[in-house]
Image (cartoon, rainbow, N blue to C red; front, side, top):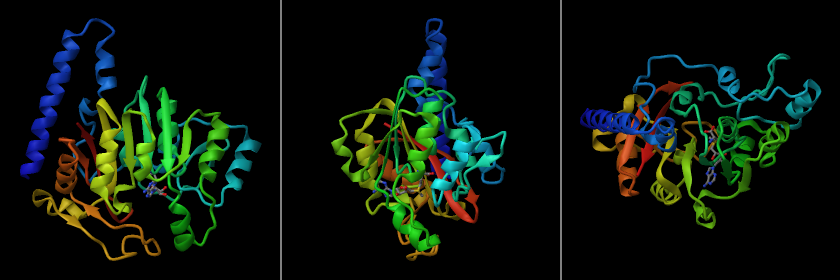
Length: 301
Ligand SMILES: C[S@@+](CC[C@H](N)C(=O)[O-])C[C@H]1O[C@@H](n2cnc3c(N)ncnc32)[C@H](O)[C@@H]1O
């Protein structure tokens, strides 16, 4: 509880600061204040697990592709397993059958406008969030993935997927400029760039050194930038006040997937972020999605 109250106070303080800056800003500047400081925009939804979210197809509709139906069908069939749901052609009801079931509740945290932003998507898989950022006006988007999923896609679903297949198919259809790098997140030092917004979705529980990853991401954050983080949680955010971090049995969260090492409470995320010199953590929600506890929040310096 103490952590939640602290969160609300920080959030209220930040929202008031943005409002003051907006009032003082010359005409036309007010919007850009929130735009370049996405982590100080008010959270759009409270930490509430009881609500329902948009369906995967409603999420997919946020990235309009509307490809020629024949091309859309070819793309659909060229990839043996899709992780993300994409609306290839809405009129013909052509959607990729994405395996991921946990995207609707993330939407509320994602800025409506990415105008002018540089965005990094860490562990992008098929790249839905990279393409969403581009569609919403990001000026540069870099997606990285070490393609670890090739292994768990084989062991969970017995499907032989080559790395980057889905990403490349969508990039082609959209004629997108998102840059894809097959790269481990722990090699990020190779990238000499700063980002205004970093997606850290679905990956923190999959790396052996989550604090190390947060430190690396923090090192690539522009002044006033933010990291949107979504990861595996603990039911009802148990142990948050103590900073609890759980370790599941190998393969317990997803049978056949031996890459889920951690379950984070909000307190654990807040404290790890603080160790990484990222003192602002805002909890968005801790829902149970498709039977799995998840946690969503925003981290800033
Ligand atoms: C569960 S998927 C999440 C995909 C997407 N970010 C989302 O949330 O919808 C996790 C992704 O992180 C990637 N990944 C895991 N460890 C990684 C690492 N050390 N460096 C880069 N990518 C990694 C996996 O290959 C996979 O694509």
